[in-house]
Length: 230
Image (cartoon, rainbow, N blue to C red; front, top):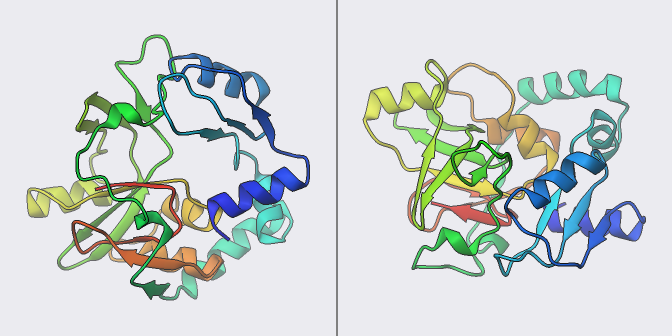
């Protein structure tokens, strides 16, 4: 199940709130998300962007457990099993995440939120960041990224984490920021495992999904991601 398919599912159940009034990505959306948390919501009319914003979608254990069809108490055993029984995702050559390719990068078009008054800029905080090392293979995790210009981000790379080790070994890396993922990918990317273990294989063991080769490099990325920044 893709992210968009899941939103359609909870909309039919009457769980997803919708806002059609114009809202701003600067403080307003983040404020609403905080106020109504954990209610999932989608903003259909973002003042500064042509794209919509969905939030509070997977922010409780109960919601994630329901997604997998288990109880909250079963989540840790489910994840442990997925780590030990990880498997390769299906590889495809065509994917929804590559239906539209933008050659001229303009990050200002995206509804990247300005979350807090004292933030240094607009931040992406929910992207799964995928990198690769020649020896250890792929890694997927989370790194908050602040927008500096129309085509530049700065990200916080924590010393000792696998991304940091890859950078120290290679000097520079191909990277894919994948936004709009389902819990199998999100939980796998948030899991601490030994270096060399591909988190997307854990994600596939949690729930089978598809990957596709990135447009500008050889990374394998979730085929159903809503946005991919390479």
